[in-house]
Amino acid sequence: MNFIKNDLVRVATAINEISIANPDKNSERIINIIDKAIEKKVDILVLPPLCTTSCSCGELFNQKKLISSSEEALKKIVKKTENKEMLIILSSIVKIDNSVSHYLLAIQEGQIIDRCPLKDSKETLYNLNKYLDHFYSSDNLMFLKSNNLTISVSYSSSIKNTTTTKDHINIQLLTEANIAGRTEPIEHTFKVMSSKRNNCQIVISPHRSESTAEFVSLSKALICEDGKILSSSEDLSIVDIDYGSLKSKTNKNIEYTEFKRSNKDKKLSKQYDRYPLVPKERDFQTIIDIQSEALAQRLNKTNIKSIVLGISGGLDSTWALIASTHAFKNLGLPLKNITAISMPGPGSTTRTKSQAEELCKALDVNFKNISISDSIKQHLKDINHPENDFSTAYENSQARERTQILMDIANMNGALVVGTGDLSEIALGWATYNGDQMSMYNINAGLPKTLIKALVKWYGSNNQNLEDVLSKILNTPISPELIPGKNDKIIQKTEEIIGNYDVNDFFLHKVAVCRYTPRKILEISKIVFEEESEENLKTMLNNFYRRFITQQFKRNASPDGPKVIDISLSKLAFQIPSDADFEIFTKDLKK
Image 1 (cartoon, rainbow, N blue to C red):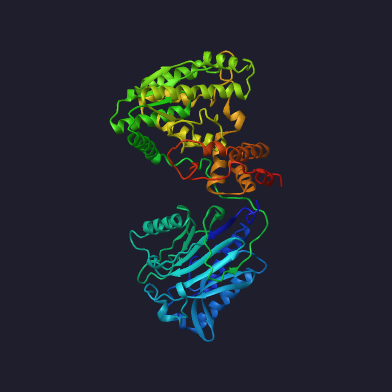
Image 2: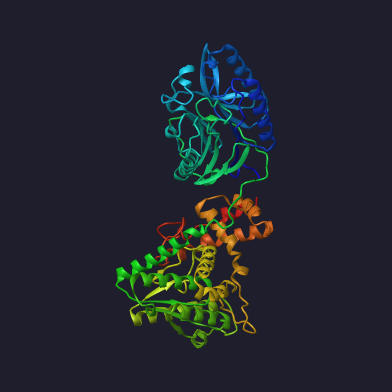
């Protein structure tokens, strides 16, 4: 994969063992690390502060022999990078005009491409200020850039004095002592910082083989991306950073030093979550709390005490009903005020009809069964539509008939119609306009299909009285059941028409949350869904873009519903023109 075109960068950290005041030995270890990093096609290698000399040299920093040996060691490291596009970040003592100072250095292609003199007025650990001359540098920061990737590099003697910027990657060279209870707070600090900044935080400190005369060095290297710790090891650790999904705000008052990156393809090592829209199970209770609170508030504001919803025996209506029962319990309203209506039609099977009834009995809600077969037959006759013509009009007439029943019964009882359509269906426009697309409040509007599956499974495992029926529902093929089958079997399967929901939800996350290019989404999908052929993935992605963009008109006319996870497609949260053209997106996949 071409990393530059796909906004990817391979970073690495390594903490070399230190021989105090012996740059020759230290440089050998560093060069060995560099060789391994080059072999692994690393773009940016981050090394600890003062890795050629050690931080704990004290008065030895003023010895000419140590200074000259350090200069030679640095020359060897610089020479090692000749004709190599890997960028190396480290700090070292540097002699300029008879003054020896501590500098941040950026090394590439046999040159020091940028340097920043360092000073920390609060330096206490190694007392570097005492032994080295200093040129004051505001915030001890160095700024680098390559194409659209921006990086800041800084140094601090304590986590309390760290500086962060809004660049894609913040690199922090840190001289911090290892104190009981210190490691976890440091990991937490940089993890939270990466989440707050929505960027990558890299922090590295010297090896524990630094002098232990007064304390032990922290010996820590961390790579955090958007709230996640991707690496925490002293050894050479390599991570592929997807900076295309990270936020960056370039400081216009700062001059960025350009560095190069290899344009050669390399195999992606980054692991992408197959289910990016499914939170951790520990958050599932929060999800049902959000949904039930949202519905409870709507009922309170409208002074309505009862609801009506369609129950099909499938996943979406099952979860909508479960979440609704929680709202009613929270409000202290009787569950019999929930009317769940099964409306079997020409394509409905005994399997789903019985599952719907069994679920309603287990939840102790009011269940009604109203067949729409005769109504549909009469309607098709009225509009002169052949009964055996299973076209769009045939299918959609059923969805609209069901919606009419729900609305009318709600009016008869002063109730609210609760919608059941999920976020995946809303994204793909997989709903009949003015049919199942419409309700008075859609409790499932913020939940994708993959999450609803996970929620139903979780709820069943925690509620013994529902485990059996929910297991049956989970094992039922996803189907609108609009076309009559043979032998009471489900013949119409949604995923055979619009594609696998696992894949579609993955696409939804990468398009609407990460805003990746179609080509990048395809390349990543080939790795995540290796069981699918490239051609099949390309077909599904083309279909996703076509439906996602052309079906905006349905989203513009959809009912309210709560946002539950990081993405919402409500008309207020996600706005695109109803008549936008999808051609530039699908064309990208033809290149």
